[in-house]
View (cartoon, rainbow, N blue to C red):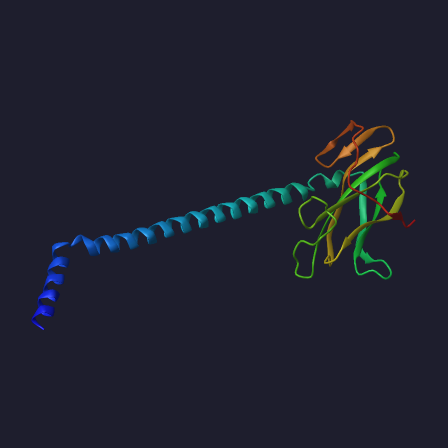
Length: 204
């Protein structure tokens, strides 16, 4: 019994003589916790920075795509736009009715549109690279002065509920001049191509 008592006292003395032992353990645990905390903080900061960056890019892109400031000077007026389904299909396409309000023949028109789903969120509008919610197409059939036309484009949207707006962004005339929504006051010579979805039909 006395032997175990002295052994116990020796162990206590040993610990007392090495006060740094417990401190080293605690410091080691604190260090691990600190490193974990630092790493976690870095990851959170990186994630938040990316989230903010992506949000800014989306906002700027949407602002650029939604720039309709020169629309009132457009030589083409969009009179009506709607979503519709083909028979035996659950996907929606889009149709626009528009008019050449000038006294010149138009050889091609590029359109853009924006739509939302049932939750009022940006829908799939056949954008093919544009920001979600946006889509675009073109009509390269001649539209006579003062004439109107209704055409449709196959966007095959599975969630679109409503078209918020549809508008022309470029208009090419038979004489080679061009109207551009980004330069609404400038009819200039151009032979630019008109990428986008080609219309599938004209309804009149």
